[in-house]
Image (cartoon, rainbow, N blue to C red; front, side, top):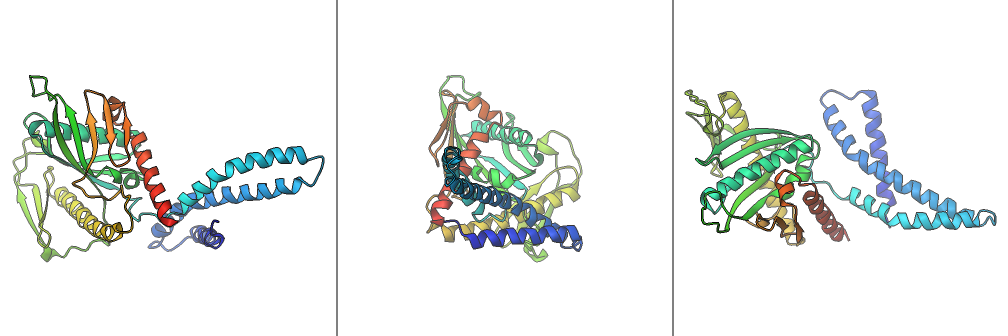
Length: 350
């Protein structure tokens, strides 16, 4: 049975927030109220759909007593009963606790792993894949840092992605991505296996992570622009070292002011992610089926070019549409990962 008291509390809270917005809340509270209101709206809509369905069932049941309406009522009851399980499932999913970071922008980090030049080229392919996916979703994609290899691959890339549901959709991408293909640099036609690592971090706000000035060291360096494509003779690049953790972040665009802001944003995201991983690891003992916050060294996916196949090892999903995937068509993969995670959390909820 669905918890009626919880459904009542949610709808009452939503009505209260709506009244607050209509009355014009204080300027310092409007953002928080609007965010909570937006988060509750789809839940309340799902509650309303389910309650309308329950009322329709009761009405059809009552119609059975009328001989003239009995045949119609039986037909309506059969339809409503068939539709009810899907509605209940949708409502249970809507009631699952939300990840507080789901609505945030994401920091995407890509680095080559094993495989030398081919790994760097594959890292570049992944960067293009995520950029195209972001564009298809109507999200903004801002490159924060790009260091390219001599062959045009990626030695390191960082981007900020902003839009509706960005982190909620991309958080399952963190891990090791493995590629199997004949490298462009290989004349013998042999299939090589190489890898790149992807990290997707929720963007942190200053209120989430406080970084004392004494905890960081900021160095400026000579920069050559994004990916070494432009000559820049000013000392504008910024490197920030977080002394307690040893985390180092660099940004090497043309504006030193922007570089500092970018580097601090990435540092906050990494520190916030460390806190989230610590909390996740404490819960992991009770939850075996995690796909959203697992070990970053875990091999999560294989891209097999000779067979045109992509396999996500966490959920045993195989798609024979690798060309579309590399063009940024990640919707089927992301939907499957979201559904798997929801099913695991529903099972946990009992």
